[in-house]
Length: 161
Image (tube, rainbow, N blue to C red):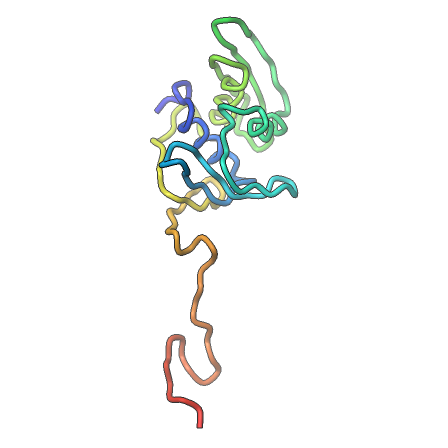
């Protein structure tokens, strides 16, 4: 999928994927219509809906990462911007109906290039640029059997005397 075609949930998803220094988990709410994230952005925890394509409050996390932002055009037809971001691979150009959409598309291009895969509508954990699908059970953490000095993990053993 071309980044220049990303909008709404797909754009929100790829922006969240691009924020791998901030987002640790991506999931969906509202019957899969809204991206939600868990993470910590410079001491500010975030746990809930993440809609940068609809809100400057959410898009501000991208704007704060801009090292250089050049708005080339903004009119009734839309906006074009060129931006460099901390941790980005290169200066990138974004176009959109608004400056916010152009900025978000430029951010995704700086991280992933001009094309991205389809949205994976499953709960995911982010490890750098990589994602791993996780189940509902692992959200609160993994519970494992702890080893005991005189037994193996999962050993039932006999009751103490």
